[in-house]
Length: 215
Ligand code: PRP
Image 1 (cartoon, rainbow, N blue to C red):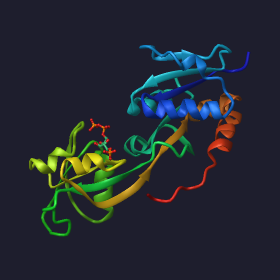
Image 2 (cartoon, rainbow, N blue to C red):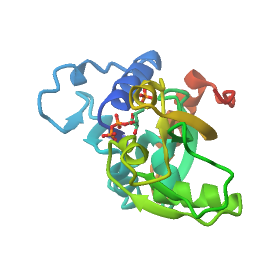
Image 3 (cartoon, rainbow, N blue to C red):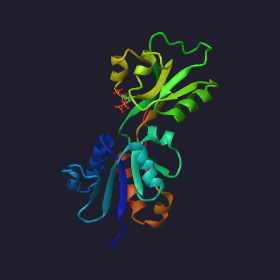
């Protein structure tokens, strides 16, 4: 029997887009239709096993080698950059990292700013690159309220449609970078599992791999 490929998928939208992508690549994914509360799925031919996990945990499963491949947003990879190889930009899950705040924010004043974020590494690196020393306040979600109620001067967060910002009276002051879903691989698995490279090449032929313009 050929080697099975285990893929850690980010639960939710990325998981759905990945299943669509694999269908486009000619794989029968019907075994994932009635998911219920299951978190592990094996294809009937045993070629694939899928693990449905939270985004930051995708990198953990791949780093530990219990998943050969992972599909996760670039936002998470920027925050957790070690222990895997990034192979492909899958060109879905498109959004961007931005600095946002209320109308009263003064991005160019000289006071030390407090930045609230779910992405402390990304935020710190962004302001470091600009030569700005900021205080990072790590929070877990609903970041948009932080500047409104005075916890922070501004936020660093992902923006997709922009509607969460608008609904909370915030606007974008600066774009940091484009984000999309990426395919990552465990380095040892890439060497030892002969099924992996042909599979990755097949996926690459479907997504193309051109850089998409910053939106
Ligand atoms: C993300 C992000 C923004 C929102 C952006 O939050 O942190 O809040 O989506 O999307 P939009 O530009 O389309 O409005 P998520 O849904 O992950 O929830 P969270 O705040 O609990 O992290």
